[in-house]
Image 1 (cartoon, chains in turn red, yellow):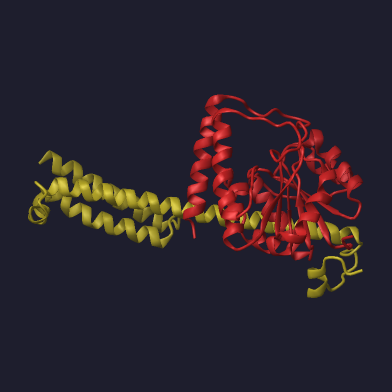
Image 2: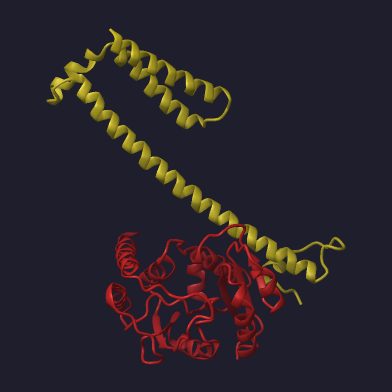
Length: 233
Length: 134
């Protein structure tokens, strides 16, 4: 059991008034020992008030920074308050908090644990350029991490103190930088990365895009981010 | 003769705009000096474009005017790259300040909820680090 100041669940939220309340209540129900920090990424709706009423601590950014900005804020908060473990969960409800204990168990032999969609559980399928992008990212990052990583863009993660210290200093704001580049950096700094299979639920609000043009652009961006991440010091 | 007039006047106007911006403290010195130097180099060239013909010949460029055009484009490209770099740096700084602000606001609100701040109570560094002094 993790102590009073052990586990922090960070939920980055941008205009998620529809589901943030349910997500916070569910997390608190499943993980009563955890503190919940919602990072309101400059929302223009009632995200802040709803999250607070649901019992979360809320940190409000004055304007929208993107997931990376919100997450670095979360990790800085965790570092400054001495938390030992950070779990990050999306605000749209697709991450099931019942898997968090599984992620925490895997932290025994890893510094960063990813909840991965394609690793056996759940029915999530993609095709076309989006799939090629995922395969490319998976191959390169698996090679870097020295272990099989199938879902590198998953925002469902658990980080121990070592990873918290790294991410409090370094967490890019660029699109895909918050997932792919952080993984590359973590591997290069010698952090042990592992994945744990999880089932993801359909989002409570919003629909993922299936346009082939967008998927191709996604492939290009994924490739660019990956190459830059590998070139960067 | 007409061409010389047009280029010369253009150079002078640019120089005046820079001096005026500088006088109103709208331009940081580091940029102002750069543009002033550019202006001072350009005006003599506008009046006497053949000044660079010898240099151009030595470099294998047909005429001084072509050389000025080439150098001008290279220079502007470098300025653009420099500005992109400055903007990136500024964005990073703004981001850090935004995060600091959000963290501070959260701390202040947590302290208020604990009833601090109603009466003035000194907060030690240890308290600030631990977050929860109880």
